Length: 360
Image (cartoon, rainbow, N blue to C red):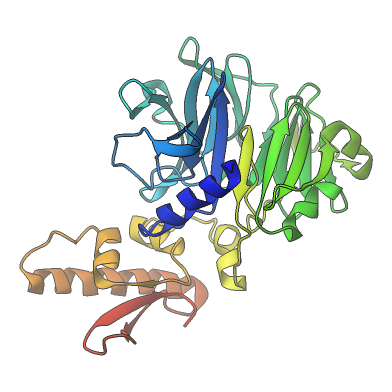
């Protein structure tokens, strides 16, 4: 029942225009909460169904966030939204039905991170820090784990946060021992088996993951500690910095108590979005449209992204749209020898135009 009701939430959320492919179910005491990733909604399980208890209307702020529970409250860490990746922490205030930003994290750059008793141990290729939620401060960790690969967009649905291990899904599966900092890689571990299983549910508990098919038939259990035999130790390259090559084109994986997901279907150009576009464009509209590649946008959808939806009169709006499209295509074609935005007639109404993003 829990699975089927969750799929109903997924389907209803996607009818609003959001493309939600992952739901996190978190446990707070005896209560269960469901969070459609990137939608900002929070559902509570009551009377054998989900009820949305979030009153806020914000959405699209934190696609690929890390949802978790700390001292009885629900938090969201990082993600991508409003044309940038970030590592801001927000907390859900259930009594108000709204999310609240923790101001001391407002300017954090994009970081991976695993849970700690105080909050989060976060890192990228440049730094390792402790984000202390209890005391609300950030502390540098000079000897902490770092990557030596600069990843522009860090999305946490490509990670599993076990009790003593941290897993990152890339072209190779990367496993980090939280206690020792030892870094392992593997192409063979059974952890990768979930990729061909389609729709299903994962339950993370301690250092283990249990997988259920959509009929809730129990399929397998995997232990992070037991899987180390399938990994190779990665040698350090400079002190506590380790090599990691991320190819972010795989299926989302849980970071909470449960994960319900639908298997992604991406063509080759879509799968390359986060690996080929790592260099900054210095154009927030182009960076936002990169995440729309393969889609066909209406005029209003494009104007919303270009922040011209409210411009009047219509002539001024059309001129601004044309100017922005030309500049975006100039920048994109300079790197890829092809435009990013193509205007086409709407196949359902030949009197109207739509805009195809990429894949011409």
